[in-house]
Image (cartoon, rainbow, N blue to C red; front, side, top):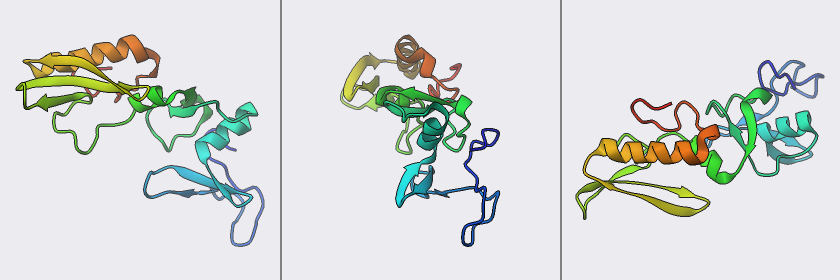
Amino acid sequence: YRNDIGRFVWKVAKGWVKPGKIAGTVNGANGYRYIKLNGVHYLEHRMVWLFVHGHLPEGEIDHINGDKKDNRIVNLRQCTRSQNEINKGLSSVNTSGCKGVSWHAQSKKWRARLKVNKKEVHLGTFENKSDAEMAYKSFLERTHGDFLSAGALNVPGGR
């Protein structure tokens, strides 16, 4: 494992693989690198955790800077599913431009909501989109402050 690049590299030649070549392959569907060991594919960031700490993580692994290709140990931390979801980028179906905020047609107001531990948390409906954005931001800062990356909020003036 080379921590400076956050990758496992081959030390010896094996078949067509030459020493120094980066191990594993990137899954085109999810963008994560996988390492094959004894016929089983493992997520590289989980293998890094095992290699450095001597045990698999108890829950999930969060890429602190939000870059799933950055597997340097300083960029990895154990987390819950809820904490890991916070650092995901803006959904491709989002139309408000802000995570956790959507237009509620029935009330004709902006709605702020998110899921925490598989349960939906309704933060309220608001006349102004900026008020809904601030409700979302405030909730995350209170409940998930340590797990907010630069892009986690995607709110104007956010972290």
